[in-house]
Length: 317
Image 1 (cartoon, rainbow, N blue to C red):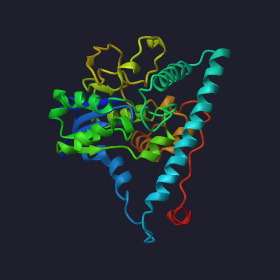
Image 2: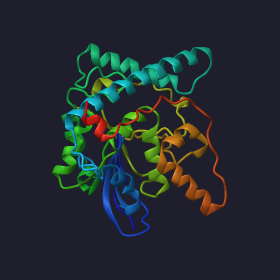
Image 3: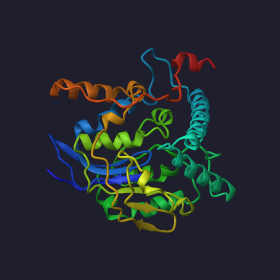
């Protein structure tokens, strides 16, 4: 069966046609960098179901959820993640000065945009916007323009990234009676700027939930638009944007840059694989079913993941 789907990214994405293996429901999905609409089978929303099944509920030892402690820890982990990303950016930029680096150019553009948003006061809380998906003045207007897209209106289920500038997108999705899927915020913080959005896209491609006809849409401020991205330096797993929604306009890029075709195991480091259980399980299943060992990417040093304390310990703080 086929169904319309869109993908929107911070960039978002909407899926236009997919393959279903069993009973399914129409869906639209937004990620930290993307939003997608699709008619997915049940397996394609398994990750989100697992991550949100107990959010805000009491724990197995009957401890009540402490919202104040949760928020304090969230802000602490957010600050730690941003500091680690700053160190990573500095290291990669320095490395580029010594030898050609495939990712340092992204950090230079990010920093330039972050600096501009703060200097021109178009950034909104949480601030400063450095080393995070930046919230911006007019985010709700950009979301409204996105909501006017025909592909969004036709969607039944939407996957949305959990970041602040897409808050209104999530609201529109729910207020229009669509099914909302969104990544777990803590997981997103751990893998911020580590290519997790691309992995989400790759997994959706592998499951047949999206294809090349799935538009990728982004929600940004007009001042975040740049024209100096070195296309020749884009990697095979980078996801190009088809539609850009700003507070003042909707831009159809008509990009010819190819979209990722699935999960590129030869680009996935052992360290990143060890931190994402669903990918390890998927890799093991594929190897078991095919009888062939999948390749693995080169080793890399990832920022340390923030370990979450048991609820009992958080509650005593």
